[in-house]
Each structure stands twice: as structure tokens, then as C-alpha cells.
Amino acid sequence: MKKLLALLLLSPLAFADVLNSDAAKDLAIKHLDKLTSLQPECVSFYFEGRNETKKKFWFEIRELHNKKCGGDPYTAPIIARVYVTNTKEIFVYNLFCNDYYLIDDYSWDMDCN
Image (cartoon, rainbow, N blue to C red; front, side, top):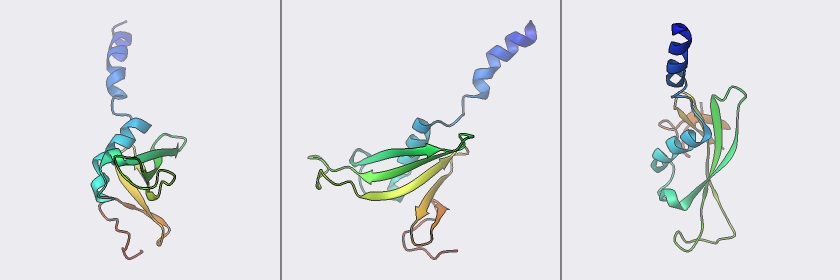
């Protein structure tokens, strides 16, 4: 009985750090300044999916055009494609390199590996 009680009390702690799509998005927002000069309220996140093990969450980050942010409200240019891992690493897709890179190593004009 004591083992069952301990398991029930400790199990929420074991899963407290599990990444979900909202936590992945929040982490990407914290590092948004590495991708754009736009304020977080002027970008939108489109959830693209996750892998079967829920260890990666993919997003498209797009400009949000409205009265406050400006721009044509009928367009939403893409800023970046990213995925966030359950280890809280953010990877950004580089179109020219056709690969993902850690956000701290990413630049749109970087040399491809």
C-alpha cells in the first residue's frame, strides 16, 4: 500500500516536465527575437504536428497582419519553420541548406554544412 501511495504522489512529478505543444510554443516565443524583430503579438504560430513519441513539435511562424501590426491582412508571410524538442532545444529550418539548425547557430545567410 505504501508503494502504491508513493507512486501516486510521485507520478505527477515524473511527468511535470513533459513537453506539450503549448509549452513548445512558449519556448519558441521566448527566443523569437533570434528570428524576427516583430513583437510576439505580431506573429502567429501554426502547429504543424509532432512525432509519435511527442519529442518534437513543429511550427510555422508567420507574420500577423492587422491594424495594430500593419501589413496586408490577406497575407501571412512565413518567418520561419521550427521544431522544439522535449529537451527544450529549438531548431530552425534553413531553406537554402534544406536542413534544420539549432536556433543559436541559425542565420538565413549561413554557410551550409
